[in-house]
Amino acid sequence: MSKKLVAYFSASGTTAVKAKALASAAGADLYEIKPEKPYTKADLNWMDSASRSSKEMKGGIKPALADNGAGIENYDVVFVGFPIWWYVAPTIINSFLEAYDFTGKKIVLFATSGGSGFGKAAQNLQQSAPNAEIIEGKILNGSVTADELKKFASRFD
Ligand SMILES: Cc1cc2nc3c(=O)[nH]c(=O)nc-3n(C[C@H](O)[C@H](O)[C@H](O)COP(=O)(O)O)c2cc1C
Image 1 (tube, rainbow, N blue to C red):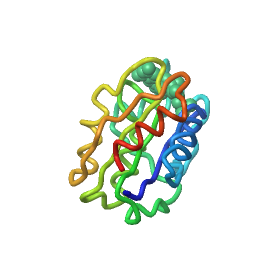
Image 2 (image 1 turned 30 degrees about the vertical axis):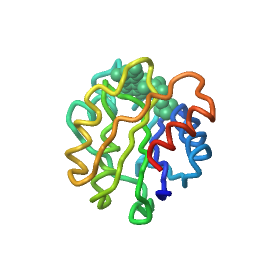
Image 3 (image 1 turned 90 degrees about the horizontal axis):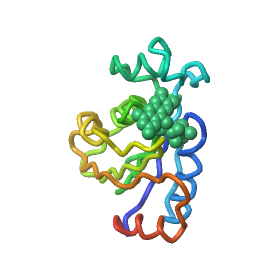
Image 4 (image 1 turned 90 degrees about the vertical axis):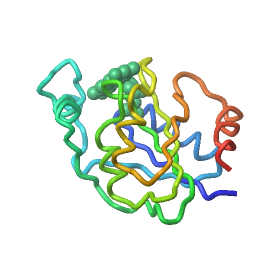
Protein backbone atom coordinates (compact mmCIF):
# COMPACT_ATOMS: atom_id res chain seq x y z
CA MET A 1 0.00 0.00 0.00
CA SER A 2 1.43 3.39 -0.89
CA LYS A 3 1.31 6.17 1.67
CA LYS A 4 -1.09 8.85 0.45
CA LEU A 5 -1.61 12.54 1.09
CA VAL A 6 -4.47 14.70 -0.12
CA ALA A 7 -3.19 18.29 -0.44
CA TYR A 8 -5.65 20.91 -1.58
CA PHE A 9 -6.17 24.60 -2.15
CA SER A 10 -9.72 25.95 -1.97
CA ALA A 11 -10.62 29.63 -2.23
CA SER A 12 -14.34 29.35 -1.52
CA GLY A 13 -14.80 25.92 0.05
CA THR A 14 -15.97 23.67 -2.80
CA THR A 15 -12.68 21.88 -3.36
CA ALA A 16 -12.21 21.57 0.42
CA VAL A 17 -15.37 19.47 0.73
CA LYS A 18 -14.19 17.11 -2.04
CA ALA A 19 -10.68 16.91 -0.62
CA LYS A 20 -11.96 15.86 2.79
CA ALA A 21 -14.22 13.22 1.25
CA LEU A 22 -11.34 11.91 -0.89
CA ALA A 23 -8.94 11.72 2.06
CA SER A 24 -11.47 9.83 4.10
CA ALA A 25 -12.31 7.41 1.25
CA ALA A 26 -8.62 6.87 0.45
CA GLY A 27 -7.42 6.56 4.04
CA ALA A 28 -5.06 9.43 3.25
CA ASP A 29 -3.73 12.30 5.35
CA LEU A 30 -5.09 15.76 4.59
CA TYR A 31 -3.19 19.03 4.12
CA GLU A 32 -4.55 22.44 3.18
CA ILE A 33 -2.40 24.56 0.87
CA LYS A 34 -2.88 28.14 2.06
CA PRO A 35 -1.57 31.42 0.73
CA GLU A 36 0.37 33.60 3.13
CA LYS A 37 -2.16 36.32 2.30
CA PRO A 38 -5.74 34.98 2.11
CA TYR A 39 -7.84 35.77 -0.96
CA THR A 40 -10.66 38.26 -0.46
CA LYS A 41 -13.86 38.18 -2.46
CA ALA A 42 -12.56 41.04 -4.61
CA ASP A 43 -9.34 39.09 -5.25
CA LEU A 44 -11.40 36.29 -6.79
CA ASN A 45 -13.34 38.46 -9.22
CA TRP A 46 -12.33 37.02 -12.57
CA MET A 47 -14.40 39.59 -14.43
CA ASP A 48 -11.97 42.24 -13.20
CA SER A 49 -8.65 42.09 -15.03
CA ALA A 50 -7.06 44.10 -12.20
CA SER A 51 -8.07 41.62 -9.47
CA ARG A 52 -5.37 39.65 -7.66
CA SER A 53 -6.43 36.31 -9.20
CA SER A 54 -6.46 37.78 -12.72
CA LYS A 55 -3.04 39.35 -12.24
CA GLU A 56 -1.53 36.19 -10.76
CA MET A 57 -2.89 33.99 -13.50
CA LYS A 58 -2.02 36.30 -16.38
CA GLY A 59 1.39 37.19 -15.01
CA GLY A 60 2.34 33.71 -13.82
CA ILE A 61 2.81 35.21 -10.34
CA LYS A 62 3.21 32.47 -7.74
CA PRO A 63 1.85 33.57 -4.36
CA ALA A 64 3.80 32.84 -1.16
CA LEU A 65 2.61 29.91 0.95
CA ALA A 66 1.42 30.27 4.55
CA ASP A 67 3.66 27.36 5.62
CA ASN A 68 5.91 24.57 4.38
CA GLY A 69 4.52 21.83 6.58
CA ALA A 70 3.11 19.26 4.14
CA GLY A 71 5.82 16.69 4.93
CA ILE A 72 5.94 15.48 1.33
CA GLU A 73 8.93 13.22 2.08
CA ASN A 74 6.57 10.92 3.99
CA TYR A 75 4.37 10.07 1.02
CA ASP A 76 4.49 8.07 -2.23
CA VAL A 77 1.32 9.44 -3.79
CA VAL A 78 0.13 13.01 -3.39
CA PHE A 79 -3.35 13.91 -4.59
CA VAL A 80 -3.31 17.63 -5.36
CA GLY A 81 -6.69 19.38 -5.54
CA PHE A 82 -7.66 22.87 -6.65
CA PRO A 83 -10.38 24.94 -8.30
CA ILE A 84 -9.89 25.46 -12.03
CA TRP A 85 -8.94 29.10 -12.65
CA TRP A 86 -8.80 30.31 -16.19
CA TYR A 87 -8.78 26.72 -17.49
CA VAL A 88 -5.69 25.72 -15.47
CA ALA A 89 -4.57 25.34 -11.83
CA PRO A 90 -4.16 28.48 -9.70
CA THR A 91 -0.48 29.49 -9.57
CA ILE A 92 -0.40 28.74 -5.82
CA ILE A 93 -0.27 25.10 -6.91
CA ASN A 94 2.99 25.90 -8.71
CA SER A 95 4.20 27.54 -5.48
CA PHE A 96 3.30 24.36 -3.59
CA LEU A 97 5.03 21.99 -6.03
CA GLU A 98 8.17 24.16 -6.05
CA ALA A 99 8.35 24.23 -2.24
CA TYR A 100 9.15 20.49 -1.94
CA ASP A 101 11.14 17.74 -3.58
CA PHE A 102 8.67 15.57 -5.49
CA THR A 103 11.33 13.42 -7.17
CA GLY A 104 9.97 9.96 -7.90
CA LYS A 105 6.54 10.71 -6.48
CA LYS A 106 3.16 10.36 -8.11
CA ILE A 107 1.07 13.52 -8.18
CA VAL A 108 -2.59 12.85 -8.95
CA LEU A 109 -4.62 15.93 -9.81
CA PHE A 110 -8.24 16.50 -8.88
CA ALA A 111 -10.24 19.67 -9.26
CA THR A 112 -13.60 21.37 -9.06
CA SER A 113 -14.79 23.88 -11.61
CA GLY A 114 -17.75 25.69 -13.04
CA GLY A 115 -17.70 23.15 -15.86
CA SER A 116 -14.21 23.27 -17.39
CA GLY A 117 -11.93 20.26 -17.50
CA PHE A 118 -8.23 20.21 -16.57
CA GLY A 119 -7.24 22.15 -19.70
CA LYS A 120 -3.48 22.53 -19.66
CA ALA A 121 -3.23 22.23 -15.86
CA ALA A 122 -1.07 19.09 -15.86
CA GLN A 123 1.25 20.49 -18.51
CA ASN A 124 1.70 23.78 -16.62
CA LEU A 125 2.33 22.02 -13.32
CA GLN A 126 4.92 19.62 -14.70
CA GLN A 127 7.42 22.51 -14.97
CA SER A 128 7.10 23.00 -11.21
CA ALA A 129 7.73 19.32 -10.39
CA PRO A 130 9.90 18.11 -13.27
CA ASN A 131 10.93 14.87 -11.55
CA ALA A 132 7.46 13.73 -10.57
CA GLU A 133 4.88 11.79 -12.52
CA ILE A 134 1.84 14.06 -12.83
CA ILE A 135 -1.41 12.27 -13.55
CA GLU A 136 -4.65 13.96 -14.59
CA GLY A 137 -6.99 12.36 -12.08
CA LYS A 138 -10.60 13.44 -11.80
CA ILE A 139 -12.81 16.50 -11.93
CA LEU A 140 -15.01 16.12 -8.84
CA ASN A 141 -17.98 18.33 -9.71
CA GLY A 142 -21.47 17.58 -8.42
CA SER A 143 -22.18 14.64 -6.16
CA VAL A 144 -19.48 12.02 -6.01
CA THR A 145 -20.04 8.95 -3.82
CA ALA A 146 -17.54 7.58 -1.31
CA ASP A 147 -17.47 4.41 -3.41
CA GLU A 148 -16.43 6.32 -6.52
CA LEU A 149 -13.73 8.11 -4.54
CA LYS A 150 -12.48 4.81 -3.11
CA LYS A 151 -12.27 3.31 -6.58
CA PHE A 152 -10.45 6.37 -7.89
CA ALA A 153 -7.93 6.35 -5.04
CA SER A 154 -7.33 2.61 -5.28
CA ARG A 155 -5.92 3.08 -8.79
CA PHE A 156 -2.86 4.47 -7.01
CA ASP A 157 -2.43 1.89 -4.23
C1 LIG B 1 -10.45 33.45 -10.48
C2 LIG B 1 -11.38 32.34 -10.86
C3 LIG B 1 -11.29 31.78 -12.14
C4 LIG B 1 -12.13 30.71 -12.51
N1 LIG B 1 -12.00 30.16 -13.76
C5 LIG B 1 -12.78 29.09 -14.10
C6 LIG B 1 -12.62 28.44 -15.36
O1 LIG B 1 -11.76 28.77 -16.18
N2 LIG B 1 -13.46 27.41 -15.66
C7 LIG B 1 -14.42 26.97 -14.78
O2 LIG B 1 -15.14 26.03 -15.10
N3 LIG B 1 -14.57 27.56 -13.57
C8 LIG B 1 -13.79 28.59 -13.20
N4 LIG B 1 -13.93 29.18 -11.96
C9 LIG B 1 -14.92 28.59 -11.01
C10 LIG B 1 -14.26 27.67 -9.97
O3 LIG B 1 -13.40 26.73 -10.59
C11 LIG B 1 -15.31 26.86 -9.17
O4 LIG B 1 -16.26 27.71 -8.63
C12 LIG B 1 -14.63 26.03 -8.08
O5 LIG B 1 -15.48 24.95 -7.71
C13 LIG B 1 -14.29 26.85 -6.84
O6 LIG B 1 -13.63 26.02 -5.90
P1 LIG B 1 -13.26 26.51 -4.43
O7 LIG B 1 -14.56 26.82 -3.73
O8 LIG B 1 -12.59 25.32 -3.81
O9 LIG B 1 -12.37 27.68 -4.53
C14 LIG B 1 -13.10 30.23 -11.58
C15 LIG B 1 -13.19 30.82 -10.31
C16 LIG B 1 -12.35 31.86 -9.94
C17 LIG B 1 -12.47 32.45 -8.56
